Image (tube, rainbow, N blue to C red; front, side, top):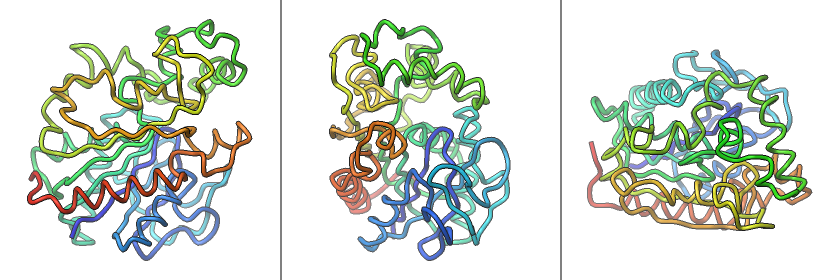
Amino acid sequence: MTDVVLVSGGAAVTPFTTPDVAADSGLAAGNSVTALRAHLLAQGVRVFTAPARIGAGTVTEDPGWQGFAGVPLVLPAELTINAVGTIDRAGEALAAFMDHLAERYDVSEAVLVGHSMGGLFSRAAIARLASSPSVSIRGLVTLGTPWTGSLLGDYLTGAITGADAHGDAFTSSVLTGSEKYASDNSQGAADEVSVTYLGGPEGWNSRHAGQLDSIPVTVIAGDHFAAHDQPTALWPHDGLVALRSASATDVPAAVLPTPQRLVLPDVHSIFFADAAGLPWERALTWDPDALAAVAAAVAASANREEGPR
């Protein structure tokens, strides 16, 4: 049986859920992946969500916007992703979490579905699992993942500037708010979710060449904000990640050989949908078309003749 592990992104707070147990109140699997979990469960797929929080520790509740409470199963900190920490440390925690699923829940094969930085966390875990795989990774699906940088990280490192927003009010507010947000929250993530860190021949992507050679990858991107088309490092974008980055357009074939790509007229998350006055169904992890695409990718990965060990 091929199971699914949902991995939320930067600054997300997500409870540990199993196919049978989730948060008792609020959004059952947090505001990033609740709809994804519900859709896949309805398809008969066994779904787990990796616990994540802002800072090191355990996840018992999220009292913030569209949060949750009453988490029946609380995993230790070493199995919990620090969603504002570095990519590789998040990968270590996720790999340890996968070991836990193998031991406690008999998970032997899985498709990783990562939202936003969760896609990078998943890739870091794949690298960790390569040397001693407790779980065979049958596929990877990313939604709004900053494969080569985010608006926040690229603004902080100077790869894009306020002038690149061309006066667009929403985009300008995201860029100008980046410095305070990073100062208040980041423990390494903001510095790394940039083209400066991820791109180039010496960047994080290139250091992971070959690790996805035998793993089918589907990348899903949003392009709701499309008032301009230049620079492509910014336009169009989903509110946090440029289309070119979320589509992994500039990732070398040695790193990402033959991905399946899908572009939807969506924003990054329900937080951005709410901020832009849009229905939640225009968010990448709540759009019915995105949910169907994830389910199809999971089914295709599960039905492959053999997966990597």
